[in-house]
Length: 182
Image (cartoon, rainbow, N blue to C red; front, top):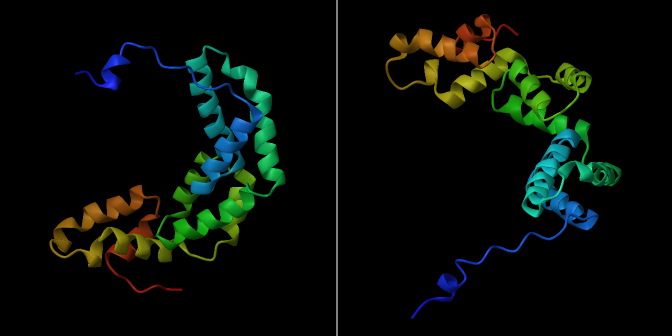
């Protein structure tokens, strides 16, 4: 006895449904239910979805650029996508977990937040890089938070802090557990 799946194994799959404004709106809404996003990031997500579906249907993905722009504009108009609010929340979250200013700027730029807005958000941030370095060392169990081999691993820990975007003085202070001068 053969299963139903084995009978249809030779069949070609049905092509996906056509790309419509409604489908784009639902796809964007579903994405935003799960993740916060910047305008540029939402546009990239929708472009990838359209590209995959258009390729499966044998269509040209560039024909749907206007629909993508309209969908993103609709979500901006509904205030469900706001680069400033996204950036503020992301800066707070990243700085609280010990991310350096350089890495925060890189992560926001990667998500498509404009450079001027990134600079403005970082200027308004009240967390110093020294405080973030201590949080990073605690989270990664570096320096004074390491259970064994602290002295042997000191230089590696400082190097890890510098690679994470912290200045040398902040990295040494966090690894050597120096008091905060501020």
